[in-house]
Image (cartoon, rainbow, N blue to C red):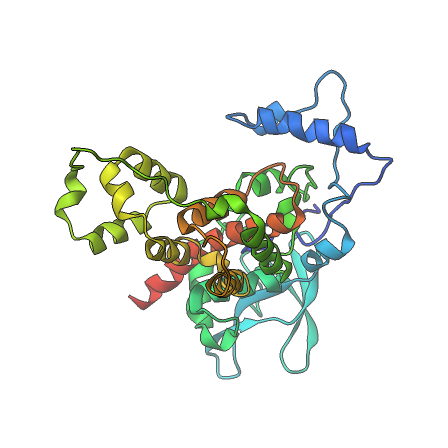
Length: 366
């Protein structure tokens, strides 16, 4: 029986990407269709998303958001596997590029001779490769390498440990790993990949240099990000709470561990926290620690704006507002329609999967 398998890192397929045409749906009907599904997604199941009143479903991506160039990265497959060398010792290997054939079978180039070899991904393996073989897109693998080593050089990662980590997350009877790919990807992972309108961000290339340019432009032109912190008139108040007995550095560390929404709520609920987190240094550190997916080249955007700020007479950036803005616009959300911010969101989503793999990877060294 034919079926699709999916990238172990991003969860997206290697084929079956369909981009709409004017004959599929008008722009207005497509917008209404996505808006209705977006409203119904809150607390519903996939069954609740069926069309109503005889409405024909749309099974294609919006051509104004993605095109063949945007999704070309999804069609090329590499894999990580384990095989015995000439001395009978198991060694992990990375394949060269290839393609997904069908029914769980990969056709990839392996070894110095670059011969075409066929593997079964996620299954029980073959005589040549006895364990599971994990397929992936190379750009997703580069994001994983960034999360593991801070570089994109495969020589800096222990492939045997990475193989053991990923195989420990392998769903032997499934077509992807047991990780959090996100609801929009899970909905698309049927017997075949479903090109769901409203989920175009999941197929945007996650490491485009245009991300840096867009963030830089927004930081330079968005006047709201330069508003000074609101003044607080304490009067005779002396803000106290359990955190006030701790050193400021420790409170900063605790705050930096909170996700964006929780940190925002804490600063609103606690006057003490609000007061000690008002300096830019704290928020720059939070951006660095809470948003590792802004790794190069994206973080270059912040450095460029800092350089411009230091040489201009403009009101400097308010880094608390910068953090809140970045956290909001980069959230992977159904119905996103900014092509570049879609790429940022996809990178953030994939980085979350990489952190799951990283935890399993590092457990092999403890």
